[in-house]
Structure formats: C-alpha cells, structure tokens
Image (tube, helix red, strand yellow):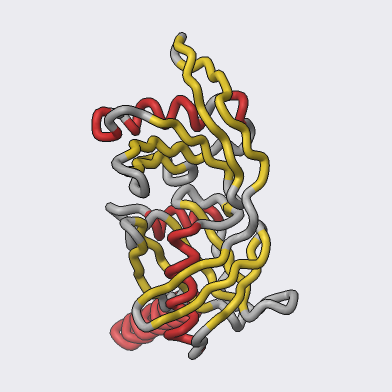
Length: 232
C-alpha cells in the first residue's frame, strides 16, 4: 500500500507538472519576425495586420538588445490603416518608445509590405508624421515623405560651455544639422548625446546630424539617433 500511494503521488506530481508546462506553452506564443537593414539601420519587422501582437516598451527594448535579444535599432509593425492609406506603420525605437517615423525604417517597411502583403508599385502608409508614399522598383524603394516643417537656420546653441551654430528641421522627426569640416573627426557619441538632450529640444529630444560637404552634390553624414542613444 505505501508503494501504491507513493506511485499515485508521483503520478499526480507528474500530471501537475505536465499541466503547468502545457499552460506555459499556451501562453508563450512564437513571434514571427523579419530582420532588415536600410542604409546601416537595422530593424525587426512584424506583420500585425491581425492585431494580435501587443508589445510593451520593455519587450521592445528586449527584442532590440544586441546581447540578449534579436538586436536592432528599432521595431516596425505593419498594421491595417485607419484612413485611406494602404497600411499603417508603427515605429518603436530601441529604448521601447514609439516615434513618429523613421526614413530608413520606412524604406524597409515598404519592402516588407511587398513581401508579406504582395504590395507592388506605389503604396502608401500612415504614420504619426503623416501619410508616406513609397514606390517599389525592382530592388529599389523610393519615398515621398511629408513636407518638412519648422526650419530654423544658424541657431546659437550653448553646449559644454561652447557656442555652436546649428540648423534645425522637422522631417516628421526633429533633426539638428551641424556642418563640420571633417565629419570623421567628430565624437558623435559625446557631442551628439549632449545636443540630443539639450533643453531647447526637450522633452522628446532630437536626432543630431553632423554633415561634411564633399563636392557640389555630395555630403557625408554621421548621426546620433534619439531612442537608439547611439550613432547610427
């Protein structure tokens, strides 16, 4: 009898553990994603047209973690539109915060829509910055972005006890633009972070672009990106 009771208890324990494991498996769903790269920015793209993917900020930050997650500059969700556009694009920075849009991300998004939703030719998608149009031509993606606003030239900015002449423009996302003689000599991490967090651009901050003119129609750009909090 003692042996029988022990066997019954053992069987009951196994059944409880099996039930627990089954419940865990039910709650944990696999996340299907695509990894893409646009001009050096990399993204995790997710088809969420069914609306079943609900990620919070910490989950997005975990996905973008390059050591413990997938690793990316941001996450893009493809969703059904709420207006007359073909799709809705939601963009989240690597810190988990949602941003208005991302130019390189939008190009990847258009190609992703082509792959998963058979979108071809000219397509449109809504963003918090407005409706973006994209044209797909073989392997190329070109964008018609919203009109830039809030252009401010030659603004004097006090950073680290020095005055800097900067330009500002909002392309759907705020950008500080700083001409420099040699873009490769700039400490993008240090200088970009200081300007990105300047009180003039609070509370959301701004992307910081250091540019060097290299001819009549050519410039070199290095960027410190808010949300990623690194050079991109």
